Image 1 (cartoon, helix red, strand yellow):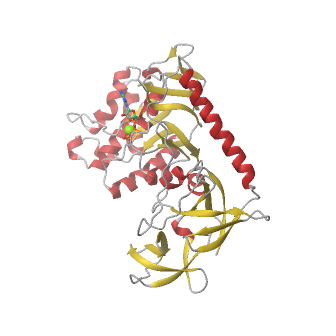
Image 2 (image 1 turned 45 degrees about the vertical axis):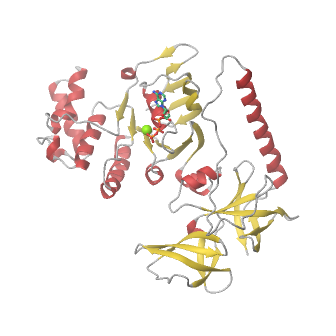
Image 3 (image 1 turned 30 degrees about the horizontal axis):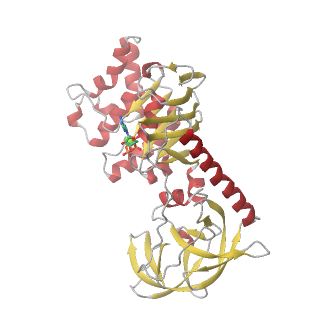
Length: 423
Ligand SMILES: Nc1ncnc2c1ncn2[C@@H]1O[C@H](COP(=O)(O)OP(=O)(O)OP(=O)(O)O)[C@@H](O)[C@H]1O
Ligand SMILES: [Mg+2]
């Protein structure tokens, strides 16, 4: 099975960069999800790898074959790339039975005997569990069953790589969950490389061996789901993954001699943030400035170069959403300040110690309760497990009981490190 390598792949229409200098290695047999907000360039990326869209520049390799290279003028057509494609709006032939729908692509290829086709159709329909419906027409199937026929049809010609573009978006929540687990099984049993597009972060988290998070055509982070969740490299990534969303808190302060950080948070409490590893802020700031400078130089280079086109859809700094009851009394943050990121599950309700908070709202689902907690003017989202009932406006005490508290730079929005908070 092949590995897919993208080198400096760019796709632009005029000065609009749908995909901006993407470098990506999709490992053999992996399950990679392309995740990002609507319009960020996921479908375009997938279509370029599959050969359905021509990149403006760059190089794409599938296995040991270069399928696209703008410099060498190589562009292998889609049907020679040995990839399978499953679109969001898969269309089954309404006048053909399930069996005929799955066999259709194989018959077209003219390289299989009737007996071989029969064997393949039976095998793939068994894998996706629709072998009992072979004689039915699509209109006689539920949405999820139709989806499975579409998957079987994609699998039938045994593509080495399978691309899926939001294949579950037409299904209801329960069926989606079921199909997700089926897809995971399918990935295991077929041993193929799966590249899967979704804007649903839950789907991306649960399915992928690696998530490729894109924003405005730019790769933001490429890592395993848990790494993306626990060590998001920027505020954007931290905010995009996780449900309920991460809490952001303004932090103003300095580093002490012992490398711990002294902060004031919620406009009120003095806290100590301790990094999990030894980290000197001065070193971080030096690297940060260097990176910012390099980016500026690159922009200047593109502006002055004749062959390059300035990006019309500018990359803007992520605007962090800090939840408060009222807008007033908010500190003005400077480039020297920080943002602390606290996942909802890092907040625990305690009997003694910690700080006081008021229950602003409580949403029990049975298994867990999502709480909104008010601390002065600030609101935090917490999750507590079990069916505990909280009264609105009840006073509770909270602690941040986790070594996964994140510290970000307000200047570059980059992650500085993770650690603990002591109040
Ligand atoms: N043929 C085209 N001409 C000009 N712009 C295009 C063209 N095709 C796509 N775009 C633009 O490129 C950007 C990326 O499109 P793409 O379809 O890759 O987004 P996406 O990440 O798949 O979004 P969604 O989640 O909504 O499907 C979009 O802003 C889109 O408007
Ligand atoms: Mg799309």
